[in-house]
Every structure is written in C-alpha cells, then in structure tokens.
Image 1 (spheres, rainbow, N blue to C red):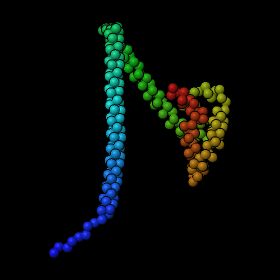
Image 2: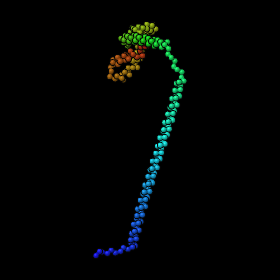
Image 3: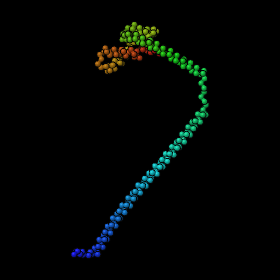
Image 4: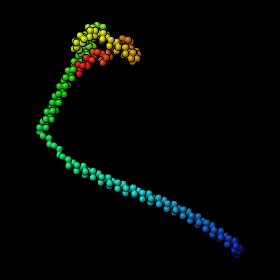
Length: 222
C-alpha cells in the first residue's frame, strides 16, 4: 500500500510562502532599480549625442555662412578692380620713331660698354707687365738705382725729382712692414727658417697696399 505523508503544518507553509514572496519582491525591486539606472544613463548619453550633433550642425552652418560672405567680398573686390581697369586711361601707343630712338640708345650703350671693356683689358695688360717688372727689383736693396728704376717703370719721373732719397723712403716702409708681419708669419709657419719667412714676406710686400709702388699701380689701373 502507498505510504501516507503527514499533513504539513499550515503555519510553516504560510511562513515559507511569505519568505518566498519577500525574496521575489526584493529581486524585482533590485531589477527595477538596475533597469531605471540603465535607462537613465542611456538617456544622458543620448542627450550628449544630440547636443554634440546640434553643435556640429551650428559649426557647419557658420562655416557655410563665412564661406558665402568671403565669396561675396571677393566678387565685390574683383568687380571694383575691373571697374578701375576700365576707367584707367589706355596705354599710349608706341610710335615708330620711339622704337627707332630706343634701338639707337641701346646700340650706343652697347658700343660704350664694348669700348670700356677694351680700355679695361689694356689697363690689365699694362698693370700685369708693370707688376712683372717690379717683381724683378730687389726691394730690400739700399740702392737708389733700384727704386728709381721702379718709378720709371711706373711712368712717374717727377717722383724722383720731388723725393731726393726715394730709396730711404722705400726701405723704411719695407722695414715697418717687416716689423709688423714677421712675428705673425713666425706664428703661422713655426717650422720655417728665417730665409723662408723672408721669401713669404717679400711676396706679401709686392702685393701689399703699404708698398709705395703699389699706390702708383692702383692709380694706373683706374
């Protein structure tokens, strides 16, 4: 025969039902709170998106407005420039006589430039020849004949008449140049012997503006 179950206590059943109902209510309450929070956050995000979209649309419309204003300003400026060009007086016509005159001026200028180039070339040849001849003269010599020869080469015979002792003046200028440059050359060329330094010094003297003979060369080259 089947086994009989004892009847449950009604109070126990009622207490269990109340507990189950309370638990279900708590679960429903938490779920509702979570749903409310979710939809609340979603609304905030949606509102931010809408606000950003509105801002972007405003910026786009402002950019279009600025572009249109700039276009109108450019059209007005171009129209104003066009009106000024129309109002400006027409360029004068160039006559045949003016063309011939300009051609003559150009030919005259080219001829003058060609003559000047020839004169400059002649001066260069003269100065080069003079420099070569001067290089053969012993600058350190006390001989007046050497200095007089140099002045003759330079085409300045009056210099020897005005100066009774040109060799002394030349010698003094060279010694002053040597006193100034020799210590510098010793520093620049520490391994050179005195004779080598003297050779370098003499080459510099031949081109130095402190050399009285070079003043005459510069005068001839002008």
